[in-house]
Length: 160
Image (tube, rainbow, N blue to C red; front, side, top):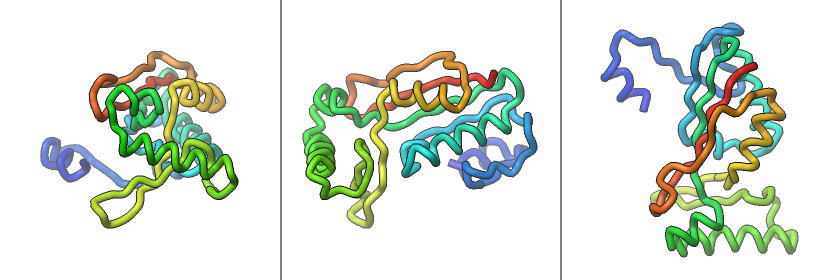
């Protein structure tokens, strides 16, 4: 995505960094956009830290626009994505019988038969709760492309 952005906007300055330590001063950005990143963070503690770091670097009333994959049980049933539904159920039941060290709603999804990707399966309620715990005001939230096989949850947050 950075390579495409650099091609389209060669005059802009793009940087890659950890979301835990954004290399900019306090109150620097008007907006921060996080697309399909947040669900790869492996604990509630890290998620809160990332939200607080975004808040630190946002100007007053700045916006954080966040999307995560929608891998809720409801979405998987609506989209008839039986393969992912079986995967969700597998990790859920393994957690119930204490054979899964991950948190509830954490799964690994195969990627191109090369590796397993960690994903936390968010609900909108969970995103709202985390956002409020980090001190954000919720401007909007919802589901993008709900009836398709792949969809995303989004939340738009404002620094207060």
